[in-house]
Structures are given as C-alpha cells and as structure tokens.
Length: 62
Image (cartoon, rainbow, N blue to C red; front, top):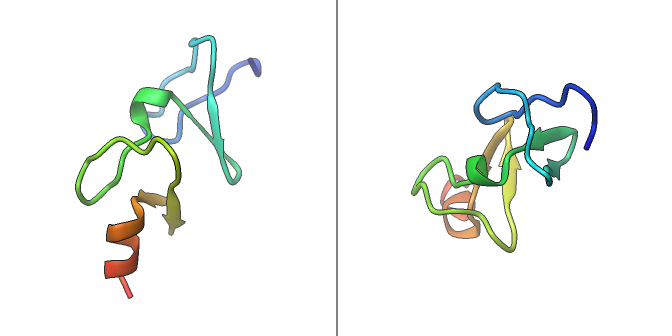
C-alpha cells in the first residue's frame, strides 16, 4: 500500500489491504461505483471529468 493514500471517491485515507488505481487516482474497492446508476464497477470502468461510469452510462453521455 502507498503511504498516506487518499481515496478519490470518499477523500478518506485508504487503510485497506488493497487499493485500486484508476488513471492517476486511488480508490477504495467499496467506492468504485458508477456515478449514474450506482452499480459497483467490477470488471471495467470509464472515466470522464474525474467521474466514474459503467459502460452503458458512459455511452449514454455522448
């Protein structure tokens, strides 16, 4: 784990055994969900303006 890692989703310190990196940001696993439908992002995620989306909701942004 990286020392003093802060989650992009909740802005809290990540103390979990694992953290997830999405582009330049670090996330708790529990914070990784679609901003639109709130479904957990397990296999893939899409990022626009520092906001995470599932594939379906990302495609609807166009």
